[in-house]
Image (tube, rainbow, N blue to C red; front, side, top):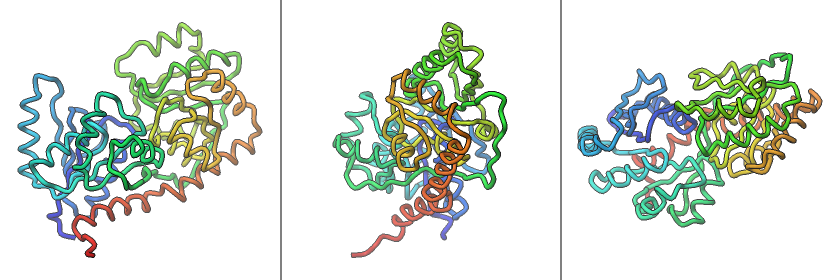
Length: 354
């Protein structure tokens, strides 16, 4: 392939979340296919090892707005991309507006089933600037198309999941849960903490991996509820894999999700999952039979689900884990998904003639 085929990825930031992880994996794969790849992060955040990639970050803050706009235009003009791939709503809007000047082929990647009012009007007004829209879950595509804020006919490309060749199961003295999610409003840790309080007479621990973003309320809430012996807030970890292997089960209490990467990794690691009955989580658990759903925001249902899991027979726990791993292998394997990305990008260079 001609090494001059140029592609830019645009993202709000490179904090280590599910969407950003997917972007970096796809970018690195395309580089191995001789694409000239550049990543633009609209914020000065990069939690990844990207020494083998070209990455440009911009300063945050209103005082840098004019400077950032000028710099962004210069980067695009100098690089001359043939394809731009934009991840998440704010970056998609940015890429659409830039397309008015630079006329590249735009692939917009929607990573969630809900859009905040902050972006909705402008997102809808610029929807026709997309050449292709991709989603990581069918629920996201269906919901946003029904809302009329995206062009119809989008493509669902699931997240890439690296499936470990072997899975270890640590024998824990007490039941060990894992939750992996940054401390954002959408993750609804309040419901999880309330559920833990309701069942605190049981013997268990919940290891929580996620960026606290300098907030104190998680620690204060844990202390006020008297659940310090059950909750271990570990903060952000760049290498969380050992905790997947040492967990007995995985829990996620999100208000909304597209296709949660951490849950996919838990399933790949043969862990039963408990998740809120919403969009992408519902799809994963219902189709794979790998866990239990609870009504989002209902701490009593979540508490009951956690107790049920902690009391089920070991063979049932293993069966759910096996189901999840098989589902990931069949639907989310790295080789299959990355080649889907390559195919939709190559269509820009090799269009089908009528």
